Amino acid sequence: MKSYKAYMNKISVPDGLHRKIVAYAGGAAQQTTVSRCSAAVRRYAAICACFVLVGMSIFTVPKLWPQSMPLPENNSALIFNQAQGQSAAADAAVAGLFWQELNADELEAVFPGLTGTHHLTATANFKNEKNSAAFYNIDAFARSAAGLKTYIKIAPGVAETDYLLGNASQPSDILGTTVTAGVFEIKSNNRGLRDVIYFANFRLSDLGYYVEISGPETEKEALQEEFTTVITQLIKGGAADISVFHPVVPKLRHDLLDLLEARADTDFGAYLPAQAPGGFVFGEALRIINQEQDTLIVFWRKGMNYIDWRVSRLEEKDKTRIISSADRLNYDLSFYPIPRADYVPDDLRKMVDNPIFRSEELTLDMVKARTYEVDDAGDEPGPRMRFSVLYDDILIEVDVKGLSPEAVYQALQEIKHQ
Image: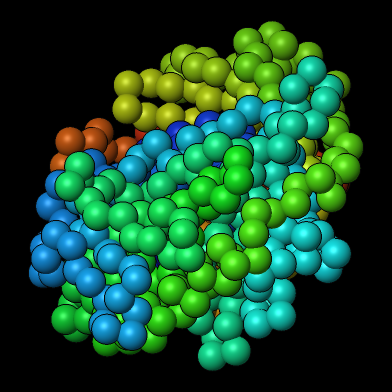
């Protein structure tokens, strides 16, 4: 569901839900989620939007094609069954997961049928089991000469399928291998255009394969042809040789802490508020260390309001978001009405979404410029804000709902002087 997730990233998700998921299955899931999109968030960014849509539309997928739709005559070996919806369980987070990118020799061993015809990128995921590495799965993308991109997942036993098929689905026979294929139709956009997603799973030896490709419905013939080609070449090449992997377990940590333990953390505990502002109550804390982050995350709650406080070290990728008080177009939300996607220029999007202020330059006016309110049905009204503050090389990201800018500013000032 990689392309579908990219589509879903355009969907707005309530802040509270977004931050809760990103912190639990985003903070943790940057360590743990199997699906991938890009180097930093490819494993996790679209989970929240996918879960939200599943609840609304899992049984409302339009059925414009018959339950079993045979391909055109030249591809008649594959039968596509109509998907009944999405599978929410396909993106579950897994504790203790780590990964490595595949080199050329490993790609040849894992995808012997594709290396000569496609450009391949792949990541092998492993699970830490008592300080020993166990193979978990492989996430890969195969790009054809025409630029069509197919996602491939390989896992022991069965590779989880991202979509639901009915009990009457018809399998296909490809070179003696049973392949169960399907099609999922995304709702038309406001211009009447729709994407389709083709997916399939099958087994080679003791490994399960899941394959997926997507694109505009107007290009379905090309998508079907490429999809069939990839599956056929995978089957002809034979099962992946995973014996080429020799992973070493990196430093990993994923601990649930109480507030005293969080404050006692030698790296980041000093960067938590001395006390919960505004009558908020401590919820939980997470200490996460993996290949992509070294972070302490603490949550406070008050009804439907929240304070999400994330402490980490400044990374090179963050430096482009550091701004000064004079750069108002980079952080002042009064310039950008909701929905901001319609107003924020692409080159300013990351900064406007989460600017980084230096602690010595932070003012109450800057915090107020980050404050806004949204009138959501079923939600409590209250000021919201999201931004980060840099204390030397320590970065605090603050995401708040229901707390005044004065209280947030005071908490940050106390950290600066402690």
